[in-house]
Each structure stands twice: as C-alpha cells, then as structure tokens.
Image 1 (cartoon, rainbow, N blue to C red):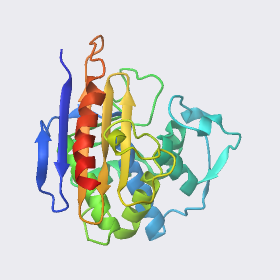
Image 2: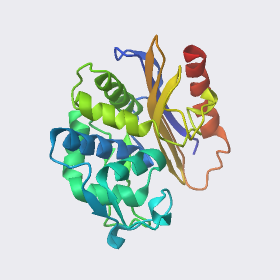
Image 3: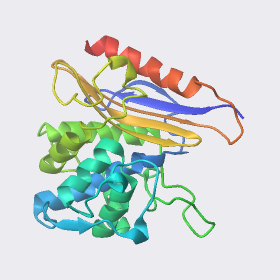
Length: 261
C-alpha cells in the first residue's frame, strides 16, 4: 500500500492556500499533545491550575522513547516546566503526568472547543498498546489541525478565537517555540533547533513520530503574514517508503520558506 498523505495550508483568515486530502483522518502520534497543552494553559491562566504546583513523575505512568525527564535526576517539577518538556521534546512521561492532572475528558473537550471533530488526544502514552487500549494515541485531519494552529497563533496576538483565550494561546505558542524537532516541514527554514524563539521569521511547531507515522503542525510567520500548516504521512507496516515522507514535508517547508524570507 502506498503512502497515505494529507496536508493543509491556511492563511490568517482561514482561507486555504493549498491542500491535499485535507479531510482524511489519520493517526498523528504526538500531535494530540497540543490539546493537552491548550487545556493546561487555560487552567493556568484562569487560576484553576497553579503553574508552580509541584508534580511527581509517577512510575505507574512511566514510558520511554521521546523525552528528557526519564534521563533527569529530579523526580519533581513544577507544572510549567512539565509543559515546556512536552512542547520542547514531546516528553512522554511528562505528558502522562500532566494528563493525570487535567484529565483526558477535559482534553477531549478542549479539542471540540477548538472546532475538531476527528482530531484529538485519545489516551495516555503507552510503551505497548493492548486490544483493551485505544488503538491510537491521537488522530486528526490536516484541515482541522491547521485550523487549531491558526487559532492559537491569532489568539496569542490578541485576535479573539473560539476554543482558546489570548493568555492561554500566548503560553502555548511560547512553549512550542522551544520545540527542537525541526526535521519535517520546518527543515528548509534552516533554523537553529535549540534557539529559534526570536528572529525575522518565526516558526513554531509540534511534530508526531511513530514507526509508521510522520506528522507536523505549526505556524510560520513574519511581519507581513502568517501561514498555519498541518502535514501527515502514514504507511502500512512492511511498506518501504524510503525518504518520501520527509521529501514531501520538505517540499511544503521550502514553499513556505520562500514566502517568508
């Protein structure tokens, strides 16, 4: 079976610049963590969640793969630092700890408030999924996810948007600007993965990677315009897709970079 591919680019008004199979529902790996960050940010802004609250990494929800907390000596961190770990390195253990704090139903409701029907976070991160667990960590469509990115960016600029307040969006955007995975759509921008929170062109993103998934959502902006994007590539186990997922992502990124620089 060939690569399943979808993407959507939106301008600041929400008009489609370019798209392909944008309403196709696909697994999106860690992309769903954006909804968790949005819910946590709203609670921090409205006072329901203290950003300085200390949370402990619970061995019961420990998970490997992406993240730094598993490699650190510190067992306890403030909520705000846990959010940064999730945004910067897609930290799986931090994700599960924060999800225990805010609850999955609230995260699902946040996705709906942001206009999503098919996109959302469905479970905590697991090393192994059994038949009793949700089949996917998260799913989404390129159109819905690009719209979520657009709303976050505009709300952070104090342009009212449904589903996210200005204060929460500003926090989420600030966190996601620390993201170190610039290997997908962001690659042609040639930004410093460790320091790209300032500059003439800004790009924040959240990527999702699993054995047969590559996904990326975000916003590229300069003084003239902002473009929200989402791109998802999935394939079947055993299929040899080579570098095609990255090549397609990079082609989108190159077109965006040409507009921004």
